[in-house]
Length: 85
Image (cartoon, rainbow, N blue to C red):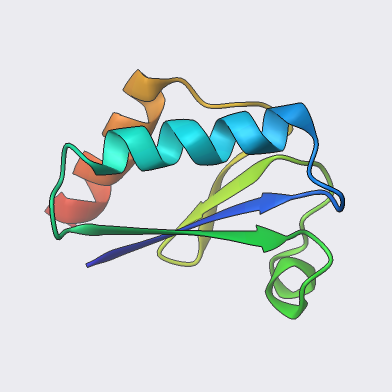
């Protein structure tokens, strides 16, 4: 199972909400293989990963995007890459 975390600001900004929405939409194309969780960039995990700009996306503990909303194609690429690893 791929562990995807979308880190956002508090309160959540529009871009952070959009990043979570897109991640969830693309995750539906990989039934049972992708778990998406929304976290605050100020959470302990956000600090551990060094999140400096939001939204930020981590796949299996590695930051793959920050400061922008990844497209559906980008999320799909992240998920496929993680599944092949």
